[in-house]
Length: 95
Image (tube, rainbow, N blue to C red):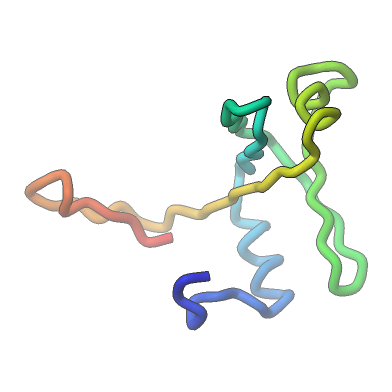
């Protein structure tokens, strides 16, 4: 993480963030092509371990990709507020 002071390490804070997210994005590599798909998700917590549960059909593109390469990442965010400005580069978000 580039700014370690922003890293979330407290378990209950992580749970609060996850609870506020509506969508999870799953990123995979399909051969040499990136593949990112938004998904509904759930999670379970066993002590300090959080397991993310993703929706998937028994046979679909995600399963076929995972059979070839099981390296994935997920992204979740909570956009709190859009910051506008006069120019496009002035726009940002509070997450």
